[in-house]
Amino acid sequence: MLLDYVSLAGGLVALIIAGDLLVRGSVSIAKRLGIPNLVIGLTIVAFGTSAPELVISLGAALENAGGIAVGNVVGSNIANVLAVLGLPALIAATPCGEDGATRNAVFMVAVTVIFIALASTGTLGLLSGLVLLGLLALFLLDSARATRRHRKDLKDGAAASCCDGASSVDDIEDVEGVPENTLLAIAYILIGLVGLPLAAQFTIDGATGIAQAWGVSDAVIALTVIALGTSLPELATTVMAAIRQHGAVAIGNVIGSNVFNLLAIMGITSAIVPIEVPAEILNFDVWVMLGCAVLLLALAKWRVCLGKVTGLLLCAAYAGYIFAVYAMGLSS
Image 1 (cartoon, one colour):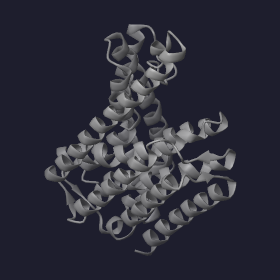
Image 2 (cartoon, rainbow, N blue to C red):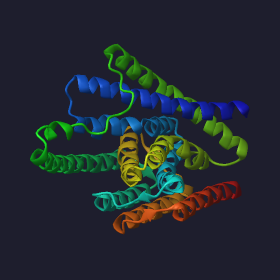
Image 3 (cartoon, rainbow, N blue to C red):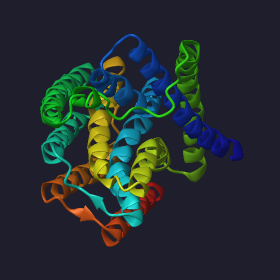
Image 4 (cartoon, rainbow, N blue to C red):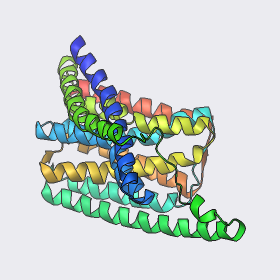
């Protein structure tokens, strides 16, 4: 039993470290190849930060552990709204009025509804995967167009007041700690590529062992422990943003992460191997996920500024969800 806990905890930590190294190394190589920052942000960084969830879900699906594959994504989306937005609000006010947030939140709700409809068949197969990946392509193209328009507006505005304004707007927020040495960047990528599947295997083995010892399903562990663990990068990002008084980026981070979880992770995984969706997730958890998506849309639409009271309510709601999952898991 102790080895299962060590395997789960160590696997989650290794997943985060390996994913971070993969992102940093890939960004370094992409910049050396002259790939635009926009493409880097929309592809390498976005997929890289979702790598822990992807390898967990894909590895679980290949081992016929559908509860872990689906529960990891559904639980992560719930944790992103309730915990990842709630905890930073306890530190500093977190505005939800970021430009474009409402439009993207509407898309997130629509994607959530489509995912539930596909999952309600009981199995996510090749067709479901192609539908989700098609929506992902539309999302990326739309994001690219919106970013280009935004950059053009900034560049035009900066050119009127500063002769070097065009170069400054090209510098989007970089990933910290990007290696300048090519060999080091390649080493980061190799470590990430090797470390991710190994860490995922330790995580899955530990989770299934703990689930068996506790008398609950794999899905319960995936919806709670694994989901929160793989959401730690998003949580760390929003907490640091709150400490630095940049809380406005939090809602955009959560919306983007939730969209990628459903479209990229579930899309890629189900396109490779069919995933059996547990009835317990269909009966309860996907509806909680949809409720969280609608809540996020409301926060964005009415530009709510999350304070300590709201943050406490969100965290309490997440604690209540965890309690309900385990209560139902132990009773079944």
